[in-house]
Length: 234
Length: 186
Image (cartoon, rainbow over the protein chains, first blue to last red):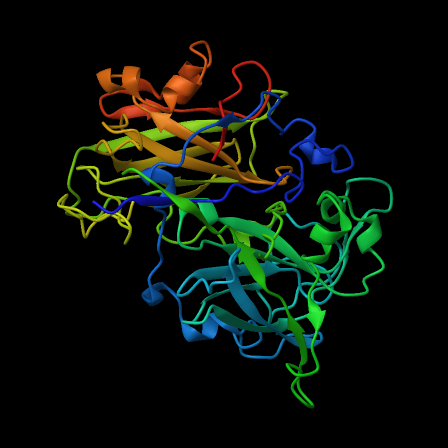
C-alpha cells in the first residue's frame, strides 16, 4: 500500500479566531473547549470529489442564467487555485454566491429593502482546469446593511466554496474588492488576523482581464493547504 | 511558499448556491451495506437551534473503501455510493442523514479505526468550519480507536450517536456550553 501523505496544518494567525466579539453572532456559536488535535488518517486525507457531469458550462456565467441581462456592472473574476507549494489544484469544484447589484440576495431570509433582480440569482459553479484556472462572469455585488451593530454595512463581497483534493483542503471564504471604504469597518473582514492575511482576500483589478466595452476584470487566486513532506504509514 | 487563503463565514445566505447534490440521501438504489438514518439538532451556547447551518459528511462505503484516488487497494468500490453528504438544517435546527453504516478503515498507527463519519459544521457566526466525527454506540472497536483515545473519557459520549430505533440514531451538535461537542484540529 502506498504511504499516505498528510497536509500541512495552518500556521497560527492565518484563519480568524472562533471567538471574535466584534462579529456578534460568534458569541454563542464558538466552542469554548480547546479543539482536540488528532492525526490525519485516511478518512481526512481523502475527500469528496465532484464529477464534471454535475457542472454545466452555463453555471459559470451568472449573467446568462435568465432571459434578460442582470442590472449592474458586469465583471469577470478569474484566477487560479494553487496549493501552498504553488502546484495547481486541478479539476476541482468552485461554487460562489453573492448579492445582486443592489445588495440583495435572492434568499427568503434576506429582508433588506433593496430590489430583487428577476434576471439574477447570484449562484454559480465551475471546475478548475488542468492548470488550476477558473473563470466566472457575474455582476459586481452591492454593499448591504446588516444588524451586527449600529449602521453596519457589509462591503461588496462574493462568497466562494472550494473542495480541493481532500477533506482537509475544504475552504469557504469571501472575496472583496480593492479600495472599498467599508473594509476597515467590517468585523468579518477584520476577523482575519493581520493586514497580510487580509490582503489575500482582496481581488486585484486587472486591465488585462478587462474586456473592452463589456466587463471589468478582477484577478483572485486561492491557496489551499499543501502536502506535508513526511509520508505516514498507511 | 504561498500562504493559504483565510477562511470566512459562510453567512446566512448560502442556501441560494449550496446545498447541492447529493444532499441528505447518500444511498442509491443498489447501495452495498446496511442503511442507517442519523438525525440530530445543531444548537448554540444558549440552547437555541441553528436554522441557518449546514453540515457536510464524508465516510467510507460498507467495506471501508473511500471513493478517492488516494485510497487504493482490494476493497470493493461501490458505484452507488459517493460517501459525501451535504445537509442544511431546517427551521428548528434539525438535519437527517440517510446513509449506510461505514466499514472500518485503517489507522495511521497500524490496525483499524472504529467505523465513523467525518462531519464539517458551517454556519453564520462560525468564522471557520468546525470538524467532528460520528461514531456508533454498538462497536467494540471504539475502545481502541486512535482518535477517540485522544478525547477525555467524559467528553467521548458527545461523539457517539445514540440509538433511537433499529438502524436509526441521534447525533446532536452542541457548539458551546454543557454537552459541547468535541471538535477537532486536523
